[in-house]
Each structure stands twice: as C-alpha cells, then as structure tokens.
Length: 378
Image (cartoon, rainbow, N blue to C red; front, side, top):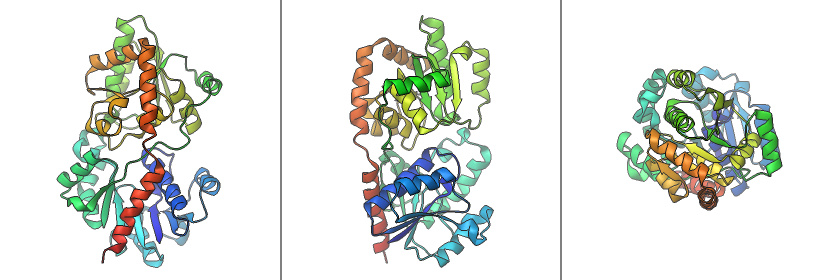
C-alpha cells in the first residue's frame, strides 16, 4: 500500500493532534515495512520534525511539502491537496485532523478526535464553531470510513453526525513511548530551572475553557485559604482562547504568588514534571480521549480527573474522578492526596498499570485494519 496522512498538524508546535499524527505515522511505518507512508502538508516541516523522522522512523515514511509544487497553502483542502492526490499514486488518504480532501475520488479515512466544537461550542472561538457546523457533517459523509479514540465519542458521531455505526471504528491512542519516570536529579534540575518547588500540583494542556482551569484555580484558592498547605499550582501549556474570566479570577484571588504559568514545554521538561508532581489534576469537562492524564500515569503521577464518560472509559479506577464543576470536591480530593502518601502510591501504581494497557503499536494495528477494510470496498 501507499498511504498519505495529513501532515498539517506537524507544522506548528505539537499538541494532542500533532502527537497523534506523528506517533501513528511512525508506528504504521514500523509495523508495515513493505508499505509506503507519506506525511503530506502545504508547507515546510519544522527542522525538529524532519530530524525526528530521520532519527526515529524507517525509510518507508517520508514528509512531502506540496508548497514546492506551487500549490497555494490557503486553499490546500479545496484545491491544493486534491490536485496533489490526482498526481500522486496513493491508495488512500488519512485525514488525521477532522478533514479530508473534497473533490477527490481517492479513498479516505477520517479521524474525528471529539465533537467538542459541536457539543460545547461556547468553549470555542465563535468563527471556528460556525465553520465546524458547516464542514464536519460534509467531511463525515465524504470519508470512506471514520475512526475515533473511544466508544463514547463513536456513539456521539453516530448520533450527532448521523453516521451509520458500521462506518465508525475505535482506535484508542496511547502515551508516547518516551514517557517514563525520570531520575530525581533530572527532575530537580528541571524544577530549579523553571522556578518550581518540591510540592506542586500539575496541569498540562492548552489554556482554554474546555479544560476547566477556572474550577481548578478556584479549588486551589480554597486550599490556600482554608488549609495550612502552600503548594504551587503549575500550569503547563500554550495560551488558548476565551481566557478573560480565568485571568480576572487569578488577578483578584490569593493564588497569584503560588501559581506558575510555564507556557508550552518540550517533552524532556514534561517528563520531569510528570515524574515529580505531588498530583496531576485534569478537570476537563469534555475530552475525546485525554492523553495528558495517561502520559502522567506513565510517569508515575497520581491523577485526579473530571468524572466524564471518556475518563471512565480510558482511566477507570486508576484515577480519582471528580465532578468537573464541583470546586469543593476537587479541593477535597487534592488535599486528600497531598496529605496521604499511601493514597498517592496506590494511585501511582494503578496508573502505571493502566497506562501500560495502551500502545501505539496497537493503535497502528487497528488503524491498518481500517485501511484494509476501506481498500477492499469496491
């Protein structure tokens, strides 16, 4: 087979979809050494991505920059990519980020990571939500097959996009292989460099409303006001959108001097913080899968997460699940874990066992089955 994958998510600093795209492509190439895989994008890939592919991927996976073929980037999905696919001898194209090329007869697989932009439109920028309402149903109809990471999102796709159940497959994601506990000295060096103390609560993710950081900030403020504890709250992630309410609360509350906003961090720093935090907290109100909690578990962190359907499916009893908008319950859970070394160790052990159930090799196997099923279709 010769398979093309959407490389657009790799053109900017990697977050969830970018990591998914790169890990899946690498795992597919390792699993199928006689097949050819292309990461296709309308612009030059960052040097870090090229170096990663050169160092960690077999020769049957390559990055293709269609910009060199005079294809206009801003009309890539409507014009540029269909033109490229018309010339390229690909058997199938995999849209890894909600989109497949229109006006192309090439068979396609579409990844829909979640339906937050439809089901929680108020947590997204209004123009992007309007665009998604128009385009996502069209993409779902156009793709030969759809994949997603959890059964709960599969049901949402069938219900809200009116897709037949036999056209949607589940391919769970996984923590990246490099996410393992690091030595204490490495973690301590990272903390000193970033100005982080020994006792800290960690959150990792884009700072946006769906991640529910306002509830976390309120619960943290309650801990500082009602207990003698003075941990730090460390928030790792790029600034997103609709942050005014969160920033206003930070300004008027007592948490300012105990809050550390690091911005986007690379994987080495993330591993150190996952490995040394007292507790990792992820009170998201909606997720399609939720990689940060599993990657934290893979590094041995005890995890508190929102009690939502996705986390019931992916994290199960390995995390302490709390109603996402219950400030008091979240504060109590954090204090309980901060105060109870035995509870931390128990959650750490269970988290390591849970994270080990997932692998990108398995994700690639399941995705490959979808490719073959699509290519068998007449």
